[in-house]
Length: 260
Length: 125
Image (tube, rainbow over all chains, first blue to last red):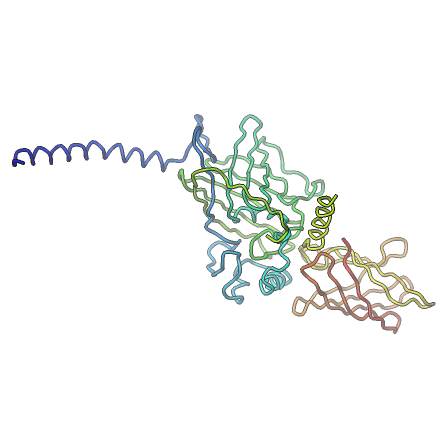
């Protein structure tokens, strides 16, 4: 190969590389951008012809924002002395949390296939989708974990219900609205037949959750929850974590044998 | 039929393991020997409001309020004081057990009018 040919080949490669750069950059930007509906509202689920869901939550349990404690994947503390840092417990609630931690969650309702409830399902791996039904002004949260349950957030502008008139459930009754790019939901009406967090944090029927869900990029969902249960905690407190976008469909799994 | 039986057993197991928040919340039932022989049933309904635990003994026409009740998380001790309709002082010093079960228990000494009984109370479903 002559020098002239070598120079020619190098120039061609360089030209191709320069041409490819903007395309790659555009593709990367497209992948990173937060998907939106034509009117600009953030889309929390798939784009048309796309397959994917949210999973791999970055938290294993509820822990007050700003607190760092080490836990295993089930929410068991590496050091039980850290228990009081996890949340602003009332004395009885701290004692119950420590009790559950010490006996290795032997009484965890999920061991007999009782669903995780809210917000435990939000840090239980297994897949999550957030379907925005804009015709009926609702959002549906579909879970792969637990018993493949789902919950509804009413987005039609209705007022939160009177707590005295709500049938108590595992997911509570949720009303929400878009605040800028955030889906904000208020939930009340929880029963106490479940642990509302991995690790065994207690709650009562007075539990009130404020959830704020944002999608800062295509691949990241940020979840923030404020826990207000004055019968269990001394003040409202907040926890937050991220989910990551996973290609494919939510895995199908059901708790069937009563031992999971 | 076998599937139905399995479903019923699973549901029963789930109920037996169901949880609650505040450990004393709910209806408790126990018995102690009655003055004229036999047994006398005691029912207490507790409700935790976040600051104070309220209790009613034997709800109905003969009910009376618990005047003081304390749950001491260290050792899960429970101390109850009340005054019966006839004005007799009543106390119940017990220990909470089976905390992780829905039908948990209180075991302790019921003192009424100077007489002491061992009373085991069970929280009802």
